[in-house]
Length: 180
View (tube, rainbow, N blue to C red):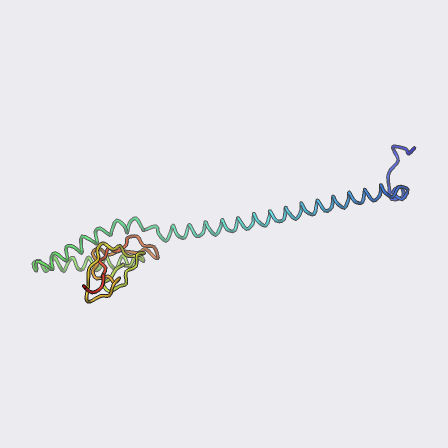
């Protein structure tokens, strides 16, 4: 009978080959298991790094958008002022009186348009433009011998963009084509 305190070594493995193969097999499976765990851990690290980089990009883009559109509420508040100035100019044009008032409003109107343009807030909507539901809101349709079907014939209320985002679509009347 073998001594229970006897060390098992390479020489002892030769005595019982089946026990030696089992130990080597166990060592191989243990190495394979550890290699699999290592590969899984490396994959998790790479995924975590990729997620972190995506998070950084998303955060950077959100910050840029926040800066880019920070003035949106101010500009939205200015638009009714612009509308009222345009109405006053139209009223002064129709009455023919108050040329000084008309001139003053025209100057203010021009300055406001410049300010809006300076802040990347261009006007949307012009007679003769092709109707685009992204930037236009059709409030009516009328027959027109002058314009083809789907073309803006009148602008009721100008729309505005802030950079590439529509902050108010233009309210327009669209041609239905020639009268039949």
